[in-house]
Image (cartoon, rainbow, N blue to C red; front, side):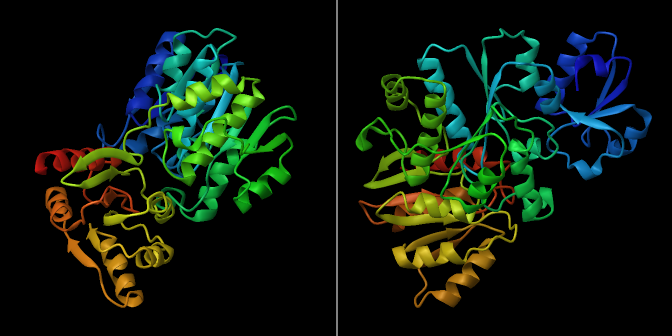
Length: 408
């Protein structure tokens, strides 16, 4: 919604976390006389009943849209409605943070005036509130929660990966995919959709899109040994960023410099260090079987892997097949999905690996030190969300790294 459409309305911000507070600041600065209140379950357990007293709700991403009972908009929609700048929107089940950061780094290296915002950077409305130069470019990481009810598409849209996730929020896999599809639902003829053409669904969406469609450019102007990121999935992230840079006519020399100097993001196949001959990798971001499979395939010798977390009903069968094929001999299992992972191992493995079931990260790390063969890798890549034991994947990864260094 345009700012003028918000005037003279009584507005309730539903959800008062980082984005909710950013929305409140923005509205109070831009429309000082506007009647704005905010609530969430930490303020009032009966917060949802307050909606009826307002003309408009501004919903934050963590609240599913089916809980909203009055007309509403979102901070994402307000941002898109109130800027005419070039916007590069990045989403994907995994890889969106890395890809958005790579795009930002390349554009900065090229001397562009660019801001990284959204799910990875500062809230969009905080950045919009600072004032915007018409020449500035926005790189926005967008989650499925933000895309679930978006009414705009970016000028350049990129989807780096697509597989099942967040069914607890969206209700089913179809709704989750449709939320991602919304990124290109409102494109115009001169917009771009950059996509991974190895994904059948993304390729179908590209055929149906009314904009220009470009698969990832596979030509990386950097030698393999100079790439800062590990794994084939990260090559796709790099290719996505390169494709967008070439759309914007950025020279390959600049692209190469930016890629070689890029610093990997924390908790994404992050090398924690080598201690007692064991190399520890923190891949706490991998909270689905598909992303953990990609992590395993990034290495030759894995001696121990940490799996398990919140049980969202994922299909672990392909992951189990890979564990058996790769002969990973030590496995730590965390609740709650450990039960189904263990059942599947018992069905498919002729001989069970050495397994520790625990709720304690320190115990898990000590197990790894005692059992991981020298010269191999201990990998934290749980194939399940973190919320059964930890606040989020960052807390899980931080604990892992802390105990790896302490126990060493």
